[in-house]
Image (tube, rainbow, N blue to C red; front, side, top):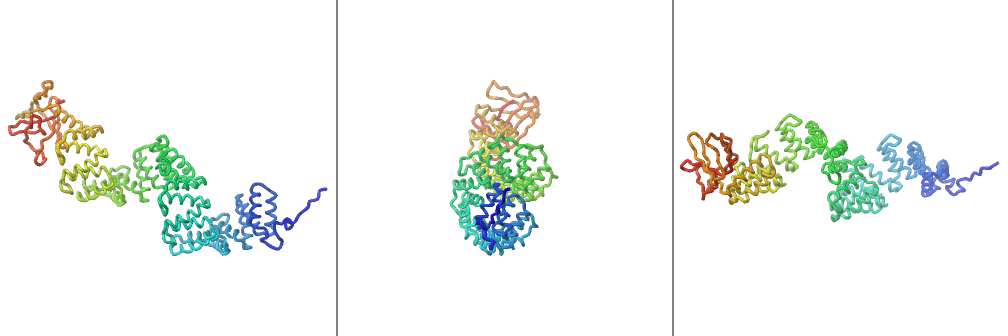
Length: 593
């Protein structure tokens, strides 16, 4: 027969029968760690000590059950130890009430237990008490001082969470004077202890030069340390660094790697950025459907940029069927959050009547909201509406005002419009030199209308010395873009090239409106006599004859004032324009088709 020998725990040296604190905190923690790893003997030892009234054992037995996700048992043992005044148990019990784990959530009971722990000098209790004050009074600045008081006490004991909290307080200027330098100081103290959130925050400080010299390499160092601990914000920040090439060589594939890691944890910013990568084909094959998948995930979390991007996708039918109503839906959600792009996009929807009834007044409302935030497209759109009197009284001075704000940001459309206002003296004194200046700015950005106008002005010497080579240069740039303006530009190229070949035509007007074209080169034959019609656009004219022939020509200008005139002779056999001389002869230059 086997005899079971029971050895009192007192004799094992684990705790003393006359003291609830006989087992040291370290001893109890070691038993809990071993028990968590599956050592049932150590779990029995910890349980026996807890049942005998040892507060440290009760606390760590509570932690054991907490890690096993049994909140009822954890709470039971924490309460046993807290009733004996064991500070760590008091703090842990406060956590249960703060987060409502197995008990009704309540700040009052959480504060009660945190304060008991803090009064015993437990650093984590001091931090948590400061945190409770912050949560309860986050919108009452006068109460921030209580949080700062407890966080400083905890930080004096090198509590990393308290150090991080102080860093945030100085960053935001809550309860203390705002100071990026002090903010970074506290972040660094916590980061040096390995607290992941502090590492990320310190990386952000270095990336943006907040309280420390801007240093992208150091930012990467701290981001990587935080990301290695799974901090989702750090993963997103690393993605941004690789996308922009800050502190690391630009690498879209690595950027997307980090964005995807953060997105897989549900980070809305990373989800939106991953959508942008798929939309532009940066680091991944371009795929609008995948872009919209990520935009939708981020938008469902209220990410304003994703809402805007999803609205754009529906507007243009990128990866989804084109749907103006859905475009408006997502644009409205983003605009209601003050997103400037969405406000402008919503203005465009009302301007065009796409997804909503056309309403210039509502369009201007949204354009104005976006323009007041400095959006160049909205400034241009608002200026354009003032010029055209859409939803507002026509007012060229206001049109010029808004276009000038837009051109300060390099908006090509506004640059062209401003050039047009100077050319026509609308809202500003007429000034061809200034018109050319703005046309050139817009043309340098590839805006086809500006390229055409610049070519036209060089051909006619408006505001610049007449120069057919430069005119041809700008006409060719416009022609290369095709479309109506491109075709007009090509006609003008034909005119200039025919001038270079001395293809000059002289047309005799008759009372029956018939014409005869005589050309210098015998190889070209002109149209027969017959009726004709003439269409001119900005002095560039096309004449259609009844027999199907077509002649392109440039209207006349008076060299003195650069204005059109009716009677001008051909100069030196070529001429700078077309028109009718004193004898009634019509002079035209161009190509006959």
